[in-house]
Amino acid sequence: MDKPAICVGFVSQDSGLGDALARALGEGFVTRSFTEPRLEQLRELREWSEVILLDLRSANTQGDEQFALRLMDEISKAPSHPPQVVLCEEENRALIYKAIEHGAYDSVTNPPNMLELRLSLRRAYKFHSAVKELQRLQANERPAGRLHELLGTSAPMQELFAMARKIAPCDVNVLVTGETGTGKELLARAIHHLSSRTAGPLVAFSCANLPETLVEDELFGHEKGAFTGALVARRGRVEAADHGTLFLDEIGDLGIGLQPKLLRVIQERSFERLGNNKTVSIDIRLICATNRNLTEMVQQGKFREDLFYRLNVVQLHLPPLRERRDDIPLLAHQFLQRFAHQFNQKARRFSQEALQTLEEHSWPGNVRELENVVQRAVVLSEGQTVDVAQLPATLRQGRVVPAPTEGREAAPLSRSYEDEVRRFKRSLVVRALRESGWRKAECARNLGVARGYLHRLINLLGIQEGEGASAAQDRDELPLGPVM
Image 1 (spheres, rainbow, N blue to C red):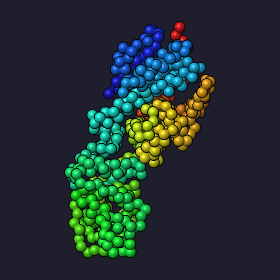
Image 2: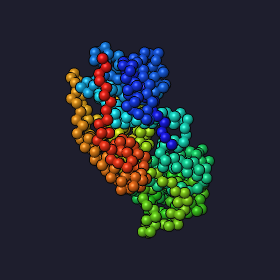
Image 3: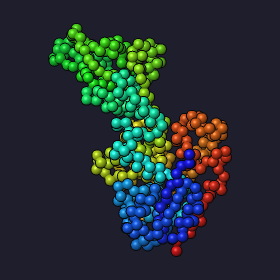
């Protein structure tokens, strides 16, 4: 099924330029011209457009420049407005930086390289789609993309959400697997929230890196005088979760000596506190999580086989962030909104380069790492746009970061490094596609990336099936002169 065309609202003083732009953009875009729109036309421009392309090439005077920036501010006042891409003379770097500060998503220099312009418009449209999706999720208009506090519209997360909704009402034990930082506790909370036990407590405990005696006391509690220092009786986490849900994180770290006691809790729904032989009956649902391979631990004798089968009634796997890159813009904007409100910052959006940097990072720390990166960026931001300069050095390594100086025009950006990286990526992807017979699923597996991310790379790099794009395609330009 063909993708719908992107509606581009083109704002220019040249009334005849829209037709030339529409022909040059070609299929996949629908262009409509707005010549010097006044305030009464802005509503129509915002409502019709999915991306707005502003022609700033004729803003050669202070008055023209102020009008253009004021127009951008008026467009941005709407709660949900289309992203703005500006077309500007390359030597007017100062105006480009001002436009970005006033809310422009990206800038394209004149004369525009049409491949670059198409990619910029598509990225802006994707940005706008992510923002609208987040707003719909926050308004609960599309609960399919949200599971309690978990967000995700990628195929792996949609499958996970469907399975979680199906098993949540059934009182079965659940084993959640996944790397550190993927949100295993959030998934456990979602299952509890959707279950019949939602009115009861959700008690969470991590078994990681704790002595076995301390874990036993935390889980099962003790009586007064059970050991030195036990001055009063204390309820454990198992008893506290009665008529609710007990979530045990890092269950693979549970000591081999405590595993039979947990097995008894599952089988008989009873236990004894330390220092007391009286049996305490409980009614709990058990959800466990681990980032370890329990099957291998069973084979190595480090985890009881009978306990593993009791825990593994239903297994849910949370994919790492690198396998669900389609969710990165959605999650990043969610965190940006949260931290901007929490720290009373002006940040409202990411620059195109910052968002692309986030999408390309491997995220070994998964969603938790992304959350921390966005928090840092929001705190360091000074305007409405979070730029790549606010990202950690490990993410922006090798990228050329613009640093405009106040009071004078900034020097043009050097694109040599980015050009080399682009050529390398293109060569790598084309070779992998050829080796896999242009089967994209196989190519994605060979490259170790998500299929959705491979599709974005193919579009970003202008790769056509069955060939290496010609040099003429990369030089495809729209011969637009300055507006007189």
